[in-house]
Amino acid sequence: MSESKLSFPTEIVELPSKGKIYPKDNPLSSGKVEMKYMTAKEEDILTNQNFIEKGIVLDKLMESLTLHKFDIKDIHTGDKNAIFIAARVLGYGSDYKFNYDGEEYEVDLSKIENKPFDIDALTDEGYGTFEMPSNGTKIQYKHLTEKDIDAITKEVLGLSKLSKGAPPEITTKLKHQIVSIDGKTDKNEIRNYVDNFLLARDSRSFRNYLKNAAPDVDLSFITNDGKEIEIPITVNFFWPDL
Image 1 (cartoon, helix red, strand yellow):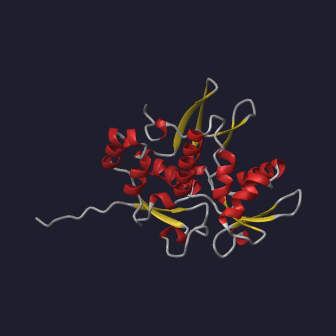
Image 2 (cartoon, helix red, strand yellow):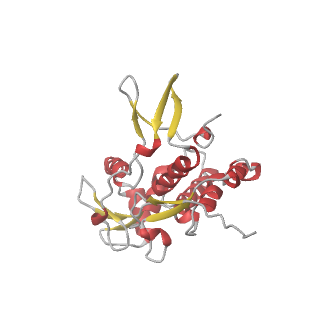
Image 3 (cartoon, helix red, strand yellow):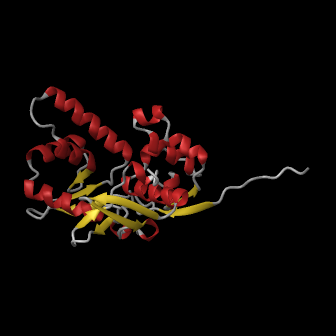
């Protein structure tokens, strides 16, 4: 009897960032990720209590599904969302039901598109630029990866233990995200600028700008009463029969 070889079908996922925010030597810089279809092996990952308790279950799922290996922590959240949506469609189909404010809705995940992302506005290093409305200060910023977010969370946690006040989440994130101010890249100068010279209205303008400027998938959904919400990614996203 001849030995048969099983091959699994794969799909190419187009990343919202188009890969332009990553270093050239990172596999993600191609702007595409090849994924295999979910199998029972991946269901084992999704139910692994050790992974769930450590909060790494979705990272382990991504590692198992992506064929071109890369450090999971190097990926941007928007690109990660695109991969998870593709994984859900390949694993369980595109019909997704969810509840919002007591009403049940159904969405076709295959119709979700990437948000527009202006790669021509990026620097050679993959940084974005923004000019502060009040005084014209020009900054360059990076699109945060999972590794950056982990570093921010760790710093905020450390600072909250030293102070009884509210943890400085906004300023800490800005200090990690801004990479230059009027061409100056010194980290101490950036931190000093955020703490002492960045006006609240400029900070808000920058953060509002990022909502549309960052690479991501468009999860907006219009409810029956005309309200725009974001499609929730909950446990039954990967377990549609729950």
